[in-house]
Image 1 (tube, helix red, strand yellow):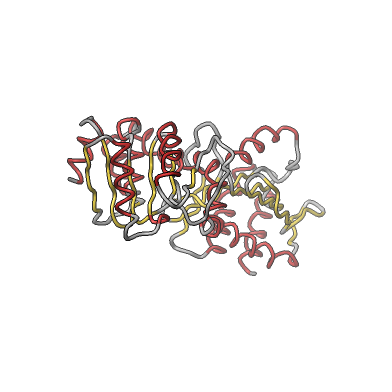
Image 2 (image 1 turned 120 degrees about the vertical axis):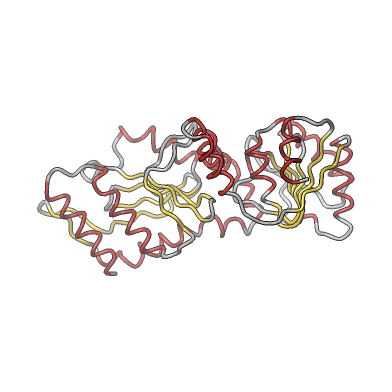
Length: 331
């Protein structure tokens, strides 16, 4: 528990100066989280890149380039239920499936927009910050649970489907950092983006044919020796819906349609997964089939390719710019 005592002692020293503001405590909270998590693969980033259409939470927590959660910190002297925070907090709760809101003393834990835990590790008495030691163990357990949220959820495809709507925006964060950084330094940004993908010998098969018929044919062949949940098809939304309808009669297993805009009904835990390019954060599959390759960005295609654990199939009808780029790299 010494790590929490040290944290509270440090922020109390800053608080006592009378000059400390919200940002003054940021480094201490980042250090505390790193000490509690104690995992070299999990990174706590102070002031990460802005998330498009969401905002800029103060911290992100990632593991192997996958977002586990976000933290928004406010100044110690202002209540977290202040009306001035409501619009921002509602926006974050709606978009971020795993979120902590804190004033450095009180911590509110949200999962899929629902408050699940509320805990205080310190309080102010006579203008001093003093620890609430009886809450230390529970707080540490909540933080560890917070950082394992994605891995626990991903084991249930049904819960994964519910998670996808919020995860779509988290994927935008990863992609936007790579894309917008090109404005500052194109060469360095490209290097950092490619480095974010898994480095491995990826087997990529290009198939030029009617993409709809060839997708069904490829799935049929894979199902001869594999389970349907070994296969992930990535397309745009309109193709995905059409393909899902045909697959329900074409394949004995009913398919799972992951769609951030629908109500995610008719879930089957052991079935083939179809999703759009914006919904693939934190996913992986033995086989990945990519279609509509000219209707998305090369960055999203690269991300989707690296989800494949064994083989990626790229199905296309005509040579376009994206196909040419991918062939140069993988063919």
